[in-house]
View 1: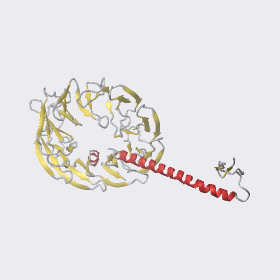
View 2 (view 1 turned 120 degrees about the vertical axis):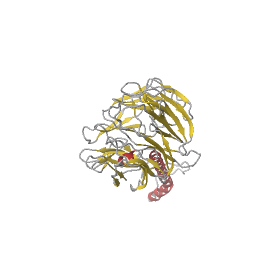
View 3 (view 1 turned 135 degrees about the horizontal axis):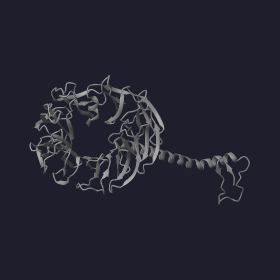
View 4 (view 1 turned 90 degrees about the vertical axis):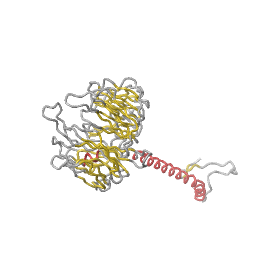
Length: 497
């Protein structure tokens, strides 16, 4: 048996017994015959490889599309990224950071230099204001500090009046500084209004008065409003966001305690069909979206509902300790865990659902906990500065004092760590962002640059210059935005693309 041209000569069983070696002068014809027999196989192999490659490419594109559809993920960004537009109006940073994305527009609340409170829509392609609606007239702050913007929430279709979303805003105004000798020196609002705005046009569709002590929370198709009565009780009312019609109300069984320098203040949070009403220093009450009391939370302070993971609701409480307790809730408001999890909740700014069943807390350690049992899974040291985490493909990406690191989300093992030049002594670490293909971090020392890292091994892919005053990054509606805070030049934002 011989090899010629990478093909093996095989003696056929139907040969007449003659030698398998072709006679002199027939070698080229024999090779041609064998080539004709083998070329369909070669073509088939190439076709299979092409189909396999196309399938993998389609799968990669599908995976990337799924990742980029998640909240907080940027659209595909490469080394050619530039500043698309710049906006340096007062309050631009706050407006962009709190913006809601409605039909492609960025809708957010702002405060002008003279204290005018507005709600406005920004075109994400140009940075131009599409519409702007004044919610409160000019009002210089009583202490010289900026006034808080309106509190706004987007309510989904209620099925009663319209199939369009509704923007509900609580506007506090008439801030008055207490008289000399009063226990509190913080200015308090003297009036309040609930304003309903069409997010497509900015038109005010409804307006109604509210108590100056009111707070607002919006969840799905319900606008929750809580206030403090004259005798110190808290009243929670679930309302139709468009009309203000009350669906049900709940009054706290006891008065809300006052602090040493402040009158009673009601706390309110609503999340995924749960609503919690309480106070800064006392008990809280957890209710379902239909008004059913699920549990009373006693001997705590500052209770709030938080979402440690996408689709997970937890009760965060304080009891005089330096860090809060976290209790993961089931649908009926009962804990699914054992002992309460200790630590400041760390909610990934991007969460693709991998490493299911784990929740994370921060502090001196980044710790992963079993959400069902409350047991600690792993813990790794962290710096004293505060940063975010991004969870993709069972990896946690986190900024550190020296740069960027990737951890195995299920075990806490360090996968890689890369150095990034940063300004020394900062109390806030740069925000990690991602487009699903790369992980980005702001480099702040000397010049400001957007640095892209390979999420698999941390290899530096490219770096692109950013405006010199850039202090952090955020993602709004799939676009990376550079935030700029400058003592000399004022605040501004730059949209990248």
